[in-house]
Figure 1 (cartoon, helix red, strand yellow):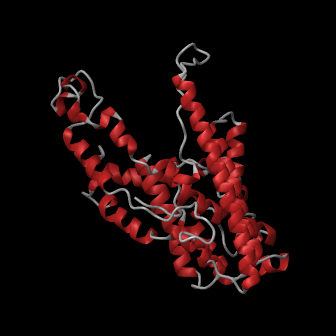
Figure 2 (cartoon, rainbow, N blue to C red):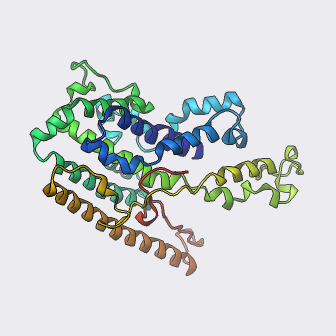
Length: 361
């Protein structure tokens, strides 16, 4: 999870690629770039710190993980194939369908639920996605209210270059998207205007989804301290292999050096970013940076932002209720169908009160 989902997927791929595309392809006062600023805040500095301390040879992750240099290179080379969230559909869908699905979180969750994976995680992920996409689409519908406006937006050179650079940089889509050959069904030019607009909205929404709740899900390091197998110095020698100074009766725990290395990784964390839940008009209101042509448009943007904040707070209350019910079921001694104690852990990765607008360490 730390290497593939968190470090590679969230930091080095999604947040890094979209931030680079924004900085390199969008003018500073375009509505799209101004909209993306809160969600890319601090990303360059954070990802550079991750590169220096976690990715480069002999840095902290290579020293803490059981890979030699060749093994680590193989891990990086194959990381994208193990990313969840849609990459695995690449072998199941046509190129055109894959391009339209990879950023559409609802379509992916529907596929997962139909396959029988109907969990509380996916229920909350879907609800969060729906409100987030409504916010993104509502904002851009203010800027581009008509079909003609939306056509100008998706056909604008900056918008095209931004999306194509992002999709070309994401490893999962880099070998799928084709440019300049309308005869191919997965060529960018073959998509209709409405399809392009949907793809742009989905891509922006999925980017925000990954750097907020996605990072919350895979970027937490509590397990490094909670799992006994990481705290080797506090366990009996019988739990350690002989090469780690134990009796060889078990391989649960790594040696002290590994635990120390992982503690150092934890020491890098806790770099706070702006809160996602921020009252309109307040000091933390990050919508103030959004571009507006006039007072009327500003009022429309404020209305979309207020609705989004209200939905976030209502969703947070629902998430808290789910966690309280889970704790109550556990404390009451309820049993599952097998007659064993019901262990129903809470889920905090989608609760907006804990989310930030951009990636951190």
